[in-house]
Each structure stands twice: as C-alpha cells, then as structure tokens.
Image: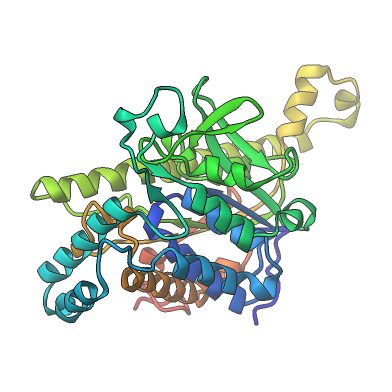
Length: 391
C-alpha cells in the first residue's frame, strides 16, 4: 500500500478508444492495489464508461464492477459460433498473421452482431428508416448499454460522493465541446452515453433539449479540462491513453488506416500537455514578479491587475502518461474488436504498465522543475532502472 503522495489532488484521466478501454481497467486495478484512489475521474467515450464504473461504486467494488462490465460485453455474439471461436483460438498464436486474421474475424462478428449488454444491430438499416429518428441516424441500438450502466453504476453515489466526475461530449447543433461535471450537473446514464455516441454507429443522445455526440470528435482527452479548472490544486494526474502518437511508417492501406487512427485520436494529449507546461511556466513567472511589487502598489490595483494576480500561482503537477501501444496484428479494427481474449490482453497490459510506472519513485514525488510540471512516459522511464541509473 502506497502512502498518499504529497499532492492536493489525484486525477485519473481516461481517453476514448472503444474496445481498447480494458487497458484502463487494468491500470485502475494496479492503482487501487497501491492505494492510489483518485479524487477526480474524467473520461471521454469508453473512458467515460470506465469513469462511471469507478466513481459509481465504493472503492472495494470498483475493480469488480469494471470486470463485470468488460466480461459482459465480450461474450461472443451469436454470429460467431463457439466452435468457430475455439477453432480460431487454437491457431491464433502460431504467428502474427493468423492472430491478425483471428482479430479481424472477431471484429467482423462485432460489426454484424454487436456486443452483448453494449450495443445491438438495428433490424432495419438506417437508410430504410424514416428520417428524424434514432433508427435513421445509426446502425446500432445502445439501449443495452443504458441498462448495463443502470445495473452496474450507482448514479446517486456519483452525484453525492466525494469523487469529482466529468465526461466530455460535443453539441451536435453548435459543434461546441461540453463537459458534464458533478459540480454543475446531476449526472445520469444519458450523460455517460452522450460522451460515447460516435456516429454513424451510435445515435446522438438528447440532454436538456440539445443533442450530443462522442467527445472524441473534438478532443479525445480530458487532460486540459482537469488541469485548467479552478480552483487549481497541486495535482498528480494519471493520463491513460489508448492511442499512441508515435509509431512505425505504414506499409499498406490497412496499416495506414490504423496509423491514421492513432494520430487522429492521440494528438490532442500531446498538444494539451505542451501548452499547459508553457502556461504554468508563465503563471509561476508572474507570481515571482508580483512578489517584487510593493504592497502599496498592489493595494490600489485596478481590474486588469487583479485579473493577472488571479492567474499567478505556484501549484505543481505530475502527469504520468500510460499509453497503450497496440500490437501489429491488431490492425485498424482494434477499437471494435470486442473479444474476451483480446480484452484480457489489454487489461493485463494496463495492469503491468501501471505497476511498472509506480516502481519509479519520482512519479509520486513533487516536481522540482522550474515550471512546476513533470511528465512521465513509461517508454522513457523504462530506459533506466527505478533508482535513476541507466538500464
């Protein structure tokens, strides 16, 4: 059990990524075992669902709730008979090629049959349905997801509990990004579903007369929202990404499509971190400048000066980035390949990555950098041993 790190706030930030989301569940399991329970959990899309499962259960039941969800939605659909799945399982480890075929077969089965307790194909294709309704806007019915959320998530706990909760979505009419947060909203299943309403698979979700789509259409990470919210606090943030910004140059159309997804859904995390570091450096510089100004001058400050004073602070931030790096055989369908075996692979990968990240003491220590911000990426941490010496 890890002693509470010297930060005012521990934040868990969960990116969108569909079937890859069990990686986040594995990370949370490792954090929970280390006693690192978040004070704030925020998510986009599948990250919103994982966030709800965490915030909507007491600490001792959170891993079980995540496990119940991920096992429920990875039961093979009827279109992939058990004997076919078993036969494919038997050959999957012979090479990356056969493993890739297996994953593509599973993903195709998801396209045809949906994912149990998550989404199911509509009996009539959207282009044959009357305009205006959800059936004309999407290929799948997400009624099963709402029932699953209401079964596994205590929304009263989310709204009354000590853990802050935020999910992001996009207003379809205005194109503006919106966050549903327990400090400003009474959260229900619809808010979580809105964050993951990715068209044309899923229909928009209506909340208070406005329709919302998946937050990943504008920003696939809640990092900036959490870091910029007031009041600012010393923060230890675990940013759990499901798409890697770095990767190999694609050699064919299939690998090109996979690489495009990685870049499209990962880039905002990198940009948000870089921008925040610059902003925080300026805030700290402003604070040092203000210390040199006589109190008599500050006492008569006008509104512009007061606005600047409000931006100055000496808060510190550690951002530990855990990024899932997909295997070559997963392909571009990795975000909708909802098989039990692959789910377990992702979960185990997240668990091990989190345990390894926590083995580096500086991750949990206050940063000593001039800008007060330290970022940690497991890929870079692993280049040396936990005591700081080269590996």
